[in-house]
Image 1: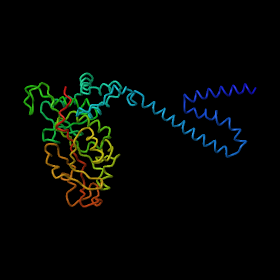
Image 2: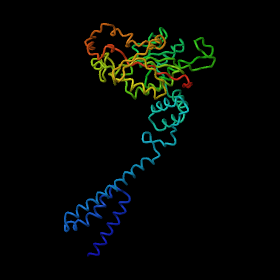
Image 3: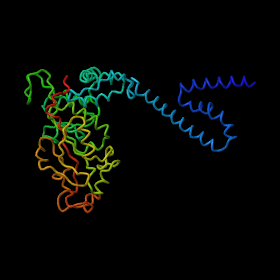
Image 4: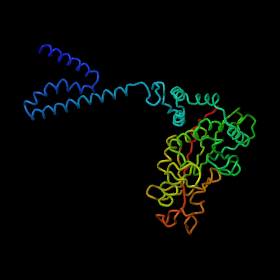
Length: 387
């Protein structure tokens, strides 16, 4: 019986050793069966000291097995040829678009396509892919076609986004601005931006300013204006919008942005503009209280050059550039600014039961200002989506 029992134990040991080699986690069970259990009876006979020694051995062995397990699991992840996000072979997704000034913009826009094949094709040749998708699969709405027509007929190259009106307006240039709402420009759809872009085509023989003799030459937009719009969007939404706008701006084009300033010290101001609230009382809630340190980098990372005009620093210091207002007639007048907001006239007064004139932290803090900067597409970036 002992020999038979010994054969069974030996067989169990061989099976556990083989199983341990295949699965490090279950090796803990093997360790118990092969080491702990046979010595258990001996431990009971020889006292507590030997049990402590045995525990030390178990800890060392367990740690070794755990390290092997972690190494094994990590090697599985790093050696996989599939992208964890898109399940696309990495060698088929070339991200080395650094030779193009549009590289970062294109890379962000490709994330708009949520299928593996589309993402891979977009990364391989963004311009060709976007052109193909737009021409073959996108049908502009009537409102988008109306916006196209206005741009093409008038030669207007400045738009205002998130406006409360649609059509020609005065937001940027007097009588020469296209005001848009979601109906004629969906900020988070690249195709909607490309639809607007088609309105900047200059046909041969056109009498519009800056016309060329090239058939269907795409000029791109000169300027985009957004005052107190972006605070209603998340950072991800703003990234998509910034990437799309970069693709349709002409070299040297400017995106003028103003939002409530998350660094302004006044407690009543911060309560008024806080995330989750609606300062205007209507529309979508504020998504964030943006600052010069967390909003401007979104645009800078996509290739824009940042020219900060008015803002508060983190320490509460107010900054207003001496030449901040000289381009008002070209890039748009920020009405909620130190110069143009009537609430900043002395003597300061409480406003609408919301802003408290006495809770300003310094004499140099105006009643109401905005975080305001110009995001400029570099002139050396000659690329634009043209088709």
